[in-house]
Structure formats: C-alpha cells, structure tokens
Image (cartoon, rainbow, N blue to C red; front, side, top):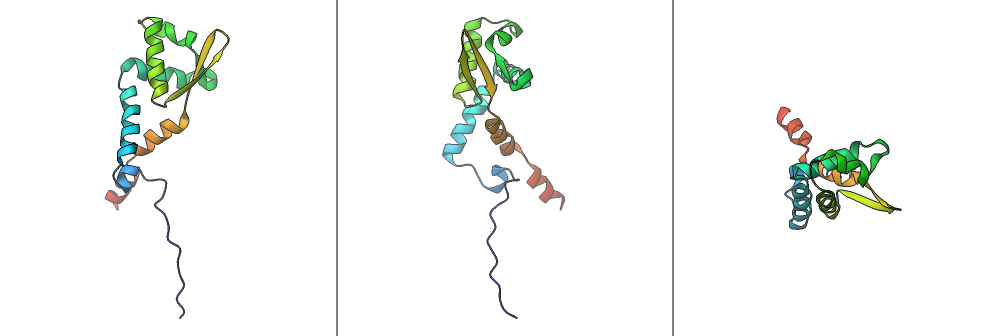
Length: 123
C-alpha cells in the first residue's frame, strides 16, 4: 500500500472562537466595546428598534418618540452604538438614517455560541 498525504483542515467556522481558543487581547478589547455599548437599556432598545424597522433602517425621527429621554440623549446613544461598530448611518437631507451592521451582530453571536461544546459534551 502506498501512503497518501492528507490535507490539514482548519478549525470549522461553526464553532465559537471561545470554544476553539482563548480570545486575543485585541479581539477582547473590540468585543468588550460592543458589549459595553449594548449594556445600556436605551441603547439595546435602539439597536432592536433599528434592526426590526421596516426596510432594515430607521430615521432618527422614527426613534426619538419611543423613549422618555431628550433628542440629544438619543443622539448620544446612537453615537455610542456607531462608535462600537454596531450600527452605521447616513444623512439624507434633514434626517439621519441608521441601520444595523449584520457582521457585528454575527461576530457577537458566534462568540457566544456554545453549539460545539454542547455537541462535544453530549457525545
């Protein structure tokens, strides 16, 4: 029998980074900023309102009436979410429109996924 060389496979993308290996310092810092931005109830609700808004984006005028805080406070919270890389925006005339960045939410979701560890534990 002859020996055949087999390719080396990379770790599957399905597994959470924390299940595969510990986070590096840079990743931990970036992800902590995202979680910190979502740690405020107003910001978490804003993120949810934007994500669930028809068409996938929301005008700031659609968001301010949902809260018992001033418009400058809403603007501050939106800026925190934007600086954390969770949303982006564009000015169109008088209004600013916001949308969620799906890659950021996917990154957070994959970090927290324990599907690989659950599958391993039940085997």
